[in-house]
Amino acid sequence: MAAATATTLNIGIVNKTTSSTVYAYVTGTALDNNNALFLLQADGKTPYYPTSPSNTQTPLSKNCSIKLGAPGSTTTVTIPHLAGARIWFCIGEELTFLLNPGPALVEPSVTNNSDPSIKKRWDFAEFTFNSTEIYANITYVDFVSIPIALDLVNTSGVSTHVSGMDQNGLNTTAKDGKGWSSLIVKASDGSNLRALAPNDGIIMNNSLFSGYYDSYVNAVYSKYATDTLKVDTQSSYGVLNGKVSNNVLTVGSETFNKPSTADIFSNSTGPFANPSGSAQRNVIIPRLAAAFNRSTFLVDTQTPAASTSSYYTNAITNHYARIVHAANLDKKGYSWPYDDVAPTGGADQSGAVYGAPKTFTVTVGGNGATASKKKKNGGS
Image (cartoon, rainbow, N blue to C red; front, side):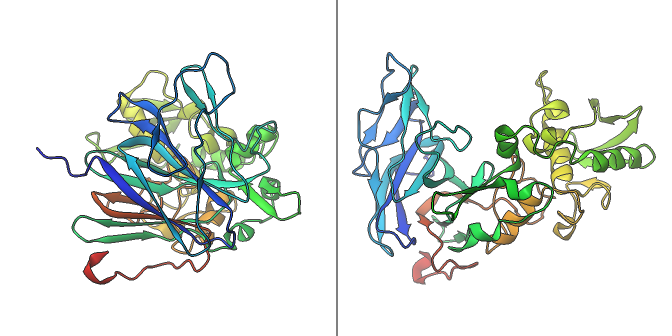
């Protein structure tokens, strides 16, 4: 059977910032080259497959800073099939990538104060491009900084547009209350540099949001001691019943102790861990995480909750996610690890585009961003 995609893909990168000094980077795992670590060189077309260095924190041996053109211009880069890939952007300065033995890529970090890029204005989108399709999303799981938009035209001519934020989107996320203002990181000039996701905020300050979800969790466990929770696994397990006994929630054959606030924001610790690798637990966890982050347990006894209008309406909720979605022009964006959970047939929340690509465009900066994009003649 012939592959649905070519072996390479041209990506149009549009500079919609107000700066003529914007750098892009492409990183990932090369699917057609034994899953080798991949970076794209500065010309936007030559692959760089680093070899394992003998020391940690070794500089790259190739220049991988792709200089974008002036505001309004499009720069085209060419990539092979990649998994776990990112398109990174940095305004005004170059980002620093390093290598550890392996080779393993040392990526810029927003939670390591000694990282050379910690004070720079940068962000990224995530994607996988394989023999079947491209799947890409704008991610806010770690932080919010530079607006990014995605446009895909598939081989049937169908266009999908994810708008991202406008150029002032970051400033709208700077909300106060219950420690949320502590997530805002300032640049040296006093402007907002980024807003950290709660999980990263806790990494920087482990007392942040301590006990925040406790009263909500107690109310949920009290409710389902008498009511029955319906967990639609959207898999072969079907809809599983959930019930609380002795402060333990049992769903199907799996049990879940009360999660802490940090568990809810990470979605991978405490009751959201799966050390046994249980397949049933793997499909339950995202749906419980969704109901906690969106705070829908008390208004809908099924998860995923049927109506998006119930999301984030409780006073105790993931306000970072609420604000991020509100700041995006189409209300879409991957703001926590399972933000792609949706009821069957329900609206996507995650800001993803996918399909066999005819054209794929990534726009950075948010200047002139719109919630929808008109389809051009010819479907491109």
